[in-house]
Structure formats: structure tokens, C-alpha cells
Length: 267
Image (cartoon, rainbow, N blue to C red; front, top):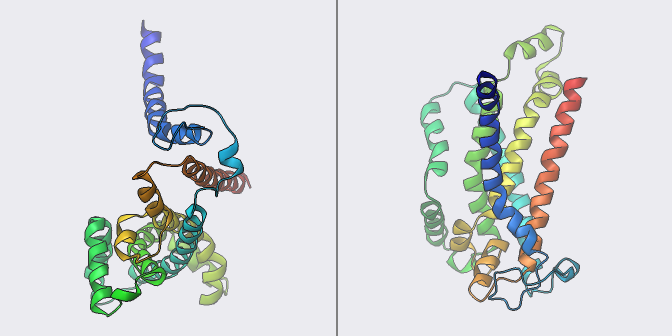
């Protein structure tokens, strides 16, 4: 009985964790399954038959691939802008002492704590007051995405910088490296995993956003907006194909990063 109790104690937490993970990934498994579905109609949400046609012709649904390309373009641009600005802000907040530093830290968290409807309507009011009500589109979406992704980048990079041992940089400078050489050869490689994580997070937030985008998009249609519009008349199975592809790409990036980290640890 003691051995049985010990075995249960050792494996119970693992079993619960695996069960929770399975429950969380269950909707993704459904999306993957439905990407091979041959529905009787667009209003059917049951698996009616197996087919490869959805994967062979993912752009059959009018406007879907255009919306995906738009979301990717905005996501990459917003990721680049938010990552550069957020990294600079993180370095300033962690490495420098200046007047207003404490309020700046507080204001950094506000976009993360505010509901998206508040953020989106505030940005819309800003664009309207600036006389851009008739020019809502790609650029207003891009600015809006950079604004709400910025906080997540700052917090992620700050966490990496806070855990960085300053003695490593001091050792480099003791070995006659100047500040520029120390930054590029010591500081940046150590902070880069945090910057990369922040960039991936920013891209996923930008690509997935609906509320802020819907308020500031004008006539542009991103992929989440296309899914919302399609749901009103029946979701085409090709949407599940795009969702599966994005999930597999994200999974591949995570696995490649993990394998790279293990190789570096072995070295």
C-alpha cells in the first residue's frame, strides 16, 4: 500500500498536467480534423466525410488568402516596429535612472491591463481627431498593432535584462572591450532569446487580433475579420486549413528553438 501510494504521489501531478494539456489542445485537434472535412453544406459543423480538396485548394474561398497575406504583412511590420521600440524602452527602463521612470513603468502596463475595446476605441478616437477618419486602413491598423504589442515586448525584454548578470559585461570591459564591443559580443547575444520571444509574441498577438483591428481597419479585411464575417453565413473548411498551417508553423518554431537551446547547453 505504501508503494502504491508513493507511485500515485509521484505520477498524479504528471497525469493531471497531461490531462489539462490534452483538454487545452482538444480544440486544435478539432480544427486539424475539420481541415479534412467534406461538409454537406457551409452550415454543417459535423465531420461528414474525408477529403484532400481543402488542402489542395486552400484559396478557393474568395478573399480568404488575400486576408491572410494582409494579416501576415501587418503582423511582420508591427512585430518589427514594436520589437525595436520595445527593446530600446526596456534597456532605458532597466539600465538607466531618470525622472519619470516609475510612471513610465506604470504606463507600460496600462495597455496590457486595459480591455481591447477600450484600447481600440481610444485609438479610433485618436485617428478621427487627427482627421484620418476617411483614411482608415493598413497604416492605422499597423499603428494600432504596434501600440498594443509594445507593452508585451517591453515586459518580455525587461524580464530578460533583469536576470542578466552585470558582472559578465564588467568582465568583458576588464578585458579591454569598449562599450560597443561589449554590447554586440556579450550583451546582445545574452538578451537575444528574450528579444526573439517578444517578437514571436508580438506577431501572434497582431495576427490574431480582431477587436482593435475591426475598429481601425476601414475597408481592409484581415484574417480574423474574414473568419468573423464568414461565420455569419457558414465557415468554409479552408479556414481550418489556414488555422492548421499556422499552428504547425508555430509548433515548428518552438521545437527548433528548443532543440537549439539543448544543443547550446550541451556545448
